[in-house]
Picture 1 (cartoon, rainbow, N blue to C red):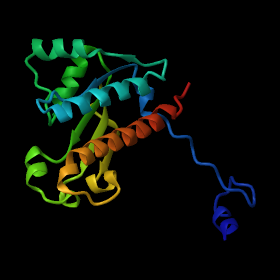
Picture 2 (cartoon, helix red, strand yellow; picture 1 turned 90 degrees about the horizontal axis):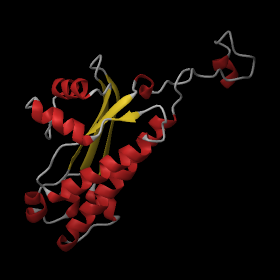
Picture 3 (cartoon, rainbow, N blue to C red; picture 1 turned 180 degrees about the vertical axis):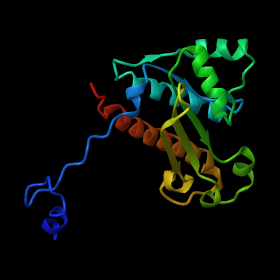
Picture 4 (tube, helix red, strand yellow; picture 1 turned 60 degrees about the vertical axis):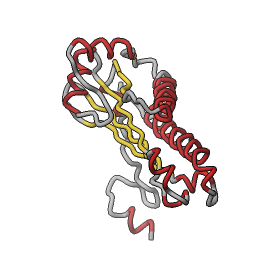
Length: 197
């Protein structure tokens, strides 16, 4: 059966499976990158964003061809031009921030999960909304979304079993931890894709 499928490809040797073209890394067009996470008044998310930003920096730093636009430089651009990069970052505003800060790529990251209201009023972990971490790499020159991923972890899955009400915060932390680990794995895969020479 495989021989029949491969037989339709004229360049394949009989009995061999044709190779797929190598996938180019979206990072091929990025020399200076800014990692953009929203400012959050909520301590749960502020701590998570600090971990996400550090994780992204550590993973992307494996690429010697990438330089980083520091968060302080982004902050100065935001203040000087009265731009708002908050929870729902508009791509146009983010691209403008990137251009003004000298970045040609922006890694925008957002994390959502149950609100304090949800945690206080929901009786069972399995009915709480999941923790969802979304990330996208925007190219500032073209406005193109070059890479995008979302990871979702339910609080029940994070804990491994149905919990009582007193352990909801623990399961939320575990879900955030798992979401960050999955995000790291996605970024690791992005970093190892080849850059054409």
